[in-house]
Length: 117
Length: 110
Image (tube, rainbow over all chains, first blue to last red; front, side, top):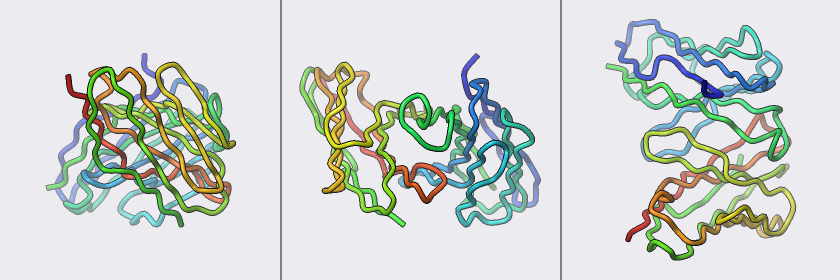
């Protein structure tokens, strides 16, 4: 079993659909994150949760809505998306928000490839 | 905000040494990470520097100069499997988590 698992791996949706991405970490970490990775652009930090509390929202449009019901699970709820939202959405976790090896480095899931038609 | 600059692409020969540079401008610097990402896969952690100097881990080493806002990742004895994207990421004390550079795509040729 991998440390961070994401489902679904691939998702195609229309602009009027509502869908959710799910992330689960089996590492006992305290912090979880959503990143967006688009072609030819750097990884963009979207949301940060520490001990189930949202500590950062990087000016992400409200059509993306995160949810962290417990320290092991993170969701990204999607509604009325635009074609430019098509990207790879990566979930990550770390032991804590700060620090070096053993605490601060990110463990990524395989990502959910989203296509918005 | 912050700027993180890396070369877009690099090519090297199997068995050679390659240095991938990363420069950054940031406030509240709290550490610099390097990650490796193979095509179609998730990024994986390679190294971390928070103090000036060189950190060595097998064939990979990472260097940091905080006064110059500069880091490099050094890969020795290159192997074909080292062909990947290398991501420089900076942590700040006043931000949630790492901000990433665009990444450097390294191609290792026989």
